[in-house]
Image (cartoon, rainbow, N blue to C red; front, top):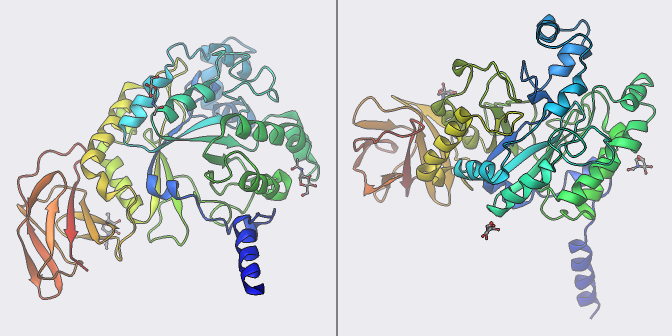
Length: 448
Ligand SMILES: *[C@@H]1O[C@H](CO)[C@@H](O)[C@H](O)[C@H]1NC(C)=O
Ligand SMILES: *[C@@H]1O[C@H](CO)[C@@H](O)[C@H](O)[C@H]1NC(C)=O
Ligand SMILES: *[C@@H]1O[C@H](CO)[C@@H](O)[C@H](O)[C@H]1NC(C)=O
């Protein structure tokens, strides 16, 4: 009788487990499973910086923040704008007049992505929603006069994708932030009166399933009250059971604390990290935000995107690919083409990507570069260039008499023979149809 009561109590107290506001407890939270299965996401950097569309989303900082200012930005302003023109004057020109959230969501869906992350607020402090803590510096009071975060969220969710929000903790020029900074972050006026009220509101209002935190590095997590916020997020928020977070919650947190790890931008590990991670990268290799002066040679082409995705997924990562929309609300056609191309590739090869796990080895280079993934008892060999002959050798898989090989997108089993006993196989390939991403996947079953 006692034993039964004890077991019941133990069970109840375990299901009601609450996280405390310290890293040991917060880091013990299991990552909601949708995230690892999703594998591919789209990142969207959109804000007032899209209006000058020059350099990058760090425009304001390079022009007026850093000492000395970057002369390229100073010249750009003196050549193209009247003297005395200030950065906030760009906001009314953020018209978003062609912004059709359903069209965007159709493009993202067509890319094969399972989640979308929009910048709700970047380091400039402008919110893409009507934050009452960001008076006259938000997309409802000025510029588009629309709730960009809400409108996109509805369209994204309507197409069965998960919706996440990027939020910068610091704001380059917020007077309260600058005051706290002058005080060596011993005061928290910015955090108490601006950051936290706004962040709690954002979560309650939009129920993001992913919070992509950034701009944390100048101050420790204790300044940002990160652990207190995360304990609320995981215990009591409306998204407590499904929300995923990254690792940018204070100086020294990246790659160490939080939900999954981004480590640094465009993180590219050379082995499987011990903790779930995500590579964020951008089609425009020089910027996350829209640039009017981007050139084709500065963009990732589709084969390089697919290679990068295959590599990332082989190492157990998620791939978050960024596009920067124009201030008019258009996704530049060249980005749309990349995203649709990625989706066409995933339509055939997605079986090797979604919900896959790293295999015992990640890659090998024979006549082609091969990235391996696995799912259940199947192993996938993604060839990221075209084999020069009608056959390809894989040295790492160990075959058995019952091994079968197919090419994704092609129903017929392929003939194969062992390279030597217990080491590898030679696969005879059919004529390879042109792949949109110049990458083809072999599916190996009954292999070790
Ligand atoms: C998305 O919206 C369309 C049209 O408004 C509706 O018919 C459809 O059921 C919605 N789909 C989902 C998954 O909510
Ligand atoms: C911030 O953290 C301090 C202690 O670390 C706590 O006393 C305070 O209530 C927190 N405030 C908010 C708004 O989270
Ligand atoms: C194979 O080539 C890729 C791409 O150049 C490289 O990243 C990888 O380390 C190579 N693998 C081995 C086992 O040498």
